[in-house]
Amino acid sequence: MSERPMRAVTIKEFGGPEVLTHEEITRPKPLPTEVLVRVHAAGINPVDWKTRAGQGMAGLQTMPLVLGWDVSGVVEEVGFGVTTLAPGDEVYAMPWFPRPAGAYAEYVTAPSRHFARKPASIGHVEAAALPLAALTAWQALVDTAHVQAGQRVLVHAAAGGVGHLAVQFAKHLGAEVVATAREHRHAWLKELGADELIDYTRQRFEDVTGHVDVVIDLVGALDDTDVRSVSVTRPGGLVVAIPDGVPERLATVAGQAGVRTSPFLVEPDSAALTTIAGLVDSGKVRIEVERTFALEEAAEAHRLGETNRTRGKLVLTVSD
Ligand SMILES: NC(=O)c1ccc[n+]([C@@H]2O[C@H](COP(=O)([O-])OP(=O)(O)OC[C@H]3O[C@@H](n4cnc5c(N)ncnc54)[C@H](OP(=O)(O)O)[C@@H]3O)[C@@H](O)[C@H]2O)c1
Image (cartoon, rainbow, N blue to C red):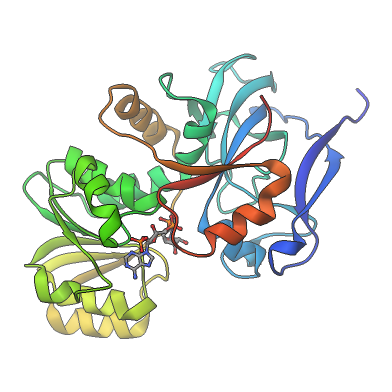
């Protein structure tokens, strides 16, 4: 079959939001075991703009690059060997991460088993907001920290994409949830299940938080949040250091206090996405989308995301 074009947002060099260019490129074809998915919406994550700027996963990418890892869409075609999905199926995923997935485009191809069935109760925009953020929150709480009912969990940056899902998952696991966010986010985060809220702009969290078992740190080195988190963690407890890994200073202070630390990098995980879809469809978990942008407005979406003030998620709408 001859090559067919598709709309995409590409970058040819690392840089500011202006390097994001809307153009036509060749539509990919699925290899054996892969599916071709028509993208309805693509979620935006901080790793997108970090990578665009030459940080994040930049070292693993080649130019020209189509950014984006979060996809919700419909299976258009299946490659040889795919028996669990068929054309017409509604799916969502964070395929390929940390290799390029090319979600800022009309079509993506990826191994069929990177995908899960999209939650039936929400649209593609909300579903596209979930994968990377929800997998991060889920894998950090469940697979890394093994959070148990009755434990106290501190979530930093609770109002963001990962944070608002971590609050809900931690609550679902039976934890008592302490969360940091600006005051105007508190009522919403209480509705989502946070038990205690701390306005980090007015109080040092370590002055008002009792001991916790687990810290889901989504802020990292900014304001020394990672190192300061050690002082609120009980000996033997765990700080999951999500944005910046475990720098030497954090390792040293934690070691002296008998607190464990863990670096973290989210992984594709269709089994977890199926579990998360179940939580969404049963009404136990809500996904918050602050704003959508058309595909060609990707640069504007990055500019807004980089202000670090997003409530929930930003999403690109790609096709109807
Ligand atoms: N390692 C991994 O696999 C992985 C995976 C996902 C994300 N991450 C990283 O984790 C971080 C969070 O990701 P995200 O998608 O949740 O980001 P996001 O949605 O852009 O987070 C924005 C939120 O951060 C809050 N915030 C900013 N500074 C804060 C501070 N000092 N204390 C408390 N809250 C603060 C803001 O809330 P207020 O309005 O209340 O200030 C805002 O709602 C990013 O650095 C991202 O790159 C890493």
